[in-house]
Length: 332
Image 1 (cartoon, one colour):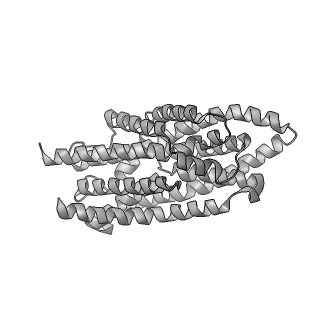
Image 2 (image 1 turned 45 degrees about the horizontal axis):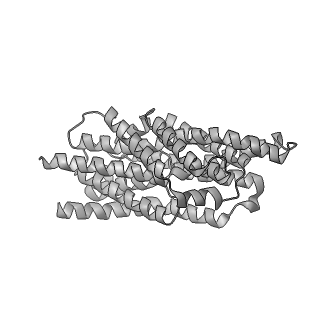
Image 3 (image 1 turned 135 degrees about the vertical axis):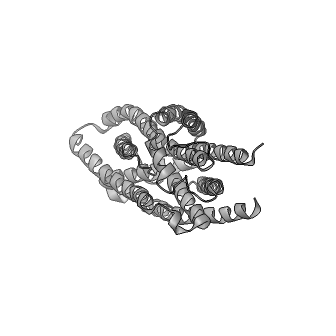
């Protein structure tokens, strides 16, 4: 069998593995608040998240196009297969490390940093399409800031509107609403996160001569959607506990405000074809809601640890991908 075909198949397998891991790593983004407030039982929440992730992943491909063509040029990428394989291995390793320790890190930061790191080691800094790469990084940085701000505003409005309502009755109503907002959040998660692996596979197909455009083949879209849904169905319990309880004590009204905020930011990014970290967005939404509710009620120590992880993911994943690329190129 042709060695290039074997390498391409290997990349596709690892891309689907990354998507699968992304599914259980980032399940918490969509359902942590609903589980922590007991709006949904964990099993029901995960099933719902898996279905909605699948539907979301089958709806859009704009983010996949951005990943395919805006970081590096797949048509001219030197040793493209090695670069992509190294990037996937790096992102998978980092996702597993952060999942093991229950840290809500960003799969988006990991894969984008890994592509850049491996490409730089392969061909130097000039291989990066800095205009596109800068826009992606800006989206990754701005989205959690917007999420924090919007979460603060949304919950501040809730406090004014529902200030005279009976707390018990209000929580009961919002617990029901939270089922809907968690479903919407799961859908938006699928519209953005699953597309990253679609873009990676399409990049590999172009680099190896099996595709001539950045259009995502339907079999790629379907495969990535299924892989993420299967990963989601397993659930990332350690991260669910962190996002759902270690940032603040979440009540149904808090959960609805955070879910609405997160879904709005993520879907807005998908509409603009920009990859964002769903982990950063929902965590920042909760922080914004918590600050508006009672700033002392936010566990800022957890927030600090998350923030450190967010900042170090890009450089660590880039460095790790560069090392892996060097070893692949040396031995293959």
